[in-house]
Length: 197
Image 1 (spheres, one colour):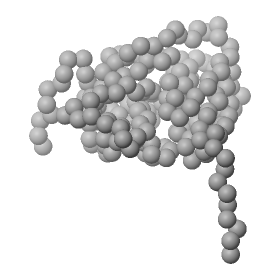
Image 2 (image 1 turned 90 degrees about the vertical axis):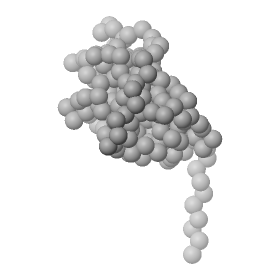
Image 3 (image 1 turned 90 degrees about the horizontal axis):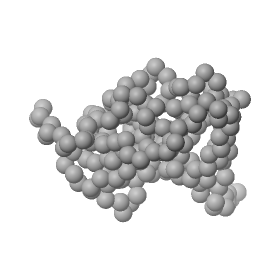
Image 4 (image 1 turned 120 degrees about the vertical axis):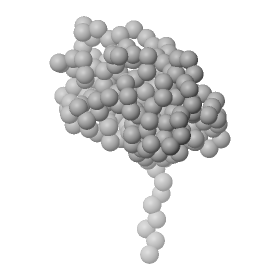
């Protein structure tokens, strides 16, 4: 095997541990290692994002919102959800990565105020890949609080098949049925079904 090239200042290399299709044209990459630039996931709550690039720099760099799932099985990893836009310079390349491939990540960048324990209810509105900042906050609350506030998440998509990370949303709702409710609304009319014989 060849030696990976030296890292650019401020960037960290992360190997893809697993890859899953999570919606039309979208993948969830589970990356090995802690979130870069931090030893505590809480530093990534409320809108922090990361810049992501390929080892060789093809396609430039783009901001994405990574998040850490809760539970021992996900310890030492973080998730990156990528929608591959056909004309995109970088997103199709990242979405094509497989376990064993690596990419470079730098962050945290940006962010907003933290949710204090005095907050008892939170409403989220997300469309498409905008679900990832919401997951970042929800998972942070799951990890850091013994009692979750009431969480309501309204997801907008064109059609049901466009819902991203539906498996995670279902798992979170099932694990916290009293605290977390997820609602879906669609912008496109349902496709007609043919009852042809």
